Length: 170
Image (tube, rainbow, N blue to C red; front, side, top):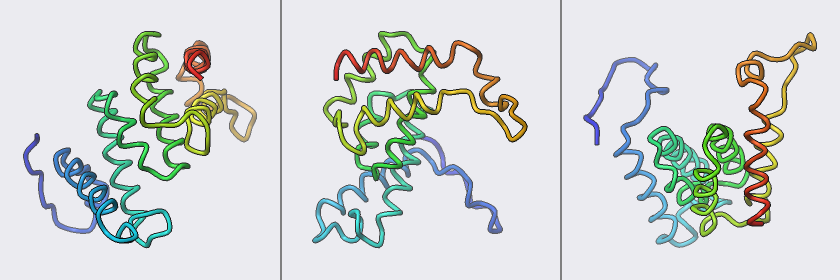
């Protein structure tokens, strides 16, 4: 756990990264309230507070990825709305594209109890999005975009390993 970073003045602190302990507590509290309160207390899909639970869970998932707590990522990501889940998890898979096949297989095995294979927020949709995102992107002039150039020519092949490993399990 980290210390408390603090309270700067002014309105420019909206982008400050919340402490990890606070993110974890907030994620657990919101998930608890969603399960406990009638109709999820506005935290379920149609609820007025659904945006907030997704924001907190996404921040916590990004923290878990940065902290290399990969085994916990699917446990929290599975509670996010499907589009956000697919987007965030596809970025996670792309980030781990250079990882060994053993690490990738473990990440897929860790996800199996939490993320379904099929459906809007399923592994098939996530791997498909990661593959789509790994394609080279051209800018308006028809030149490769800087992000695509910085990944190197083997990036798409490393992302394709996810599809091969996932395909063996699907």
